[in-house]
Image 1 (tube, one colour):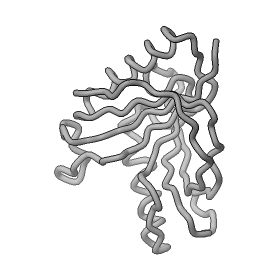
Image 2 (cartoon, one colour):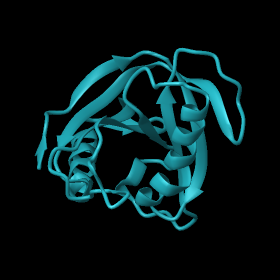
Image 3 (cartoon, one colour):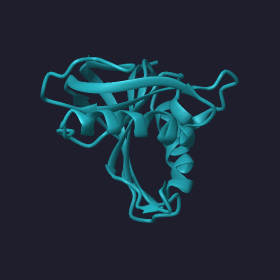
Image 4 (tube, one colour):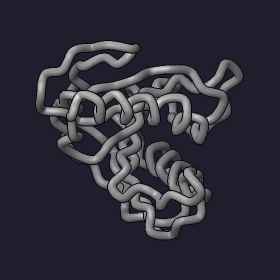
Length: 166
């Protein structure tokens, strides 16, 4: 497992095709949300214009356990206009002028350590989280028997937390 240092950066608005839902745990988003979103995009001959991302609407992303499930959006950046259908909405994720960002490389099973490091950095540097967090899949985990290989050491994920001074 390796984490890059946390940096503060500005993130522009991005147009996405997204499917939002509540799942029991973050890994459940792959079957419940991602497979449906990607199938719909393939049927409409739409290729994502940038790496896909998950948006966590529960405060602090997957670093905490939530009793009511996880409110997650599977989102694929797109440039083309396509109709919203089957729960998939085309919309713009807003620009964020102050985004704390950390890149994690390693097996998916270890990403919690990256979330913990991000939370410690935010608290230790006088910030607070101000909105939904983002998890960008810069290099997706390999597939194994039709499922994501949770132990793929080559997975690369960027964590983004919108922040403001506390």
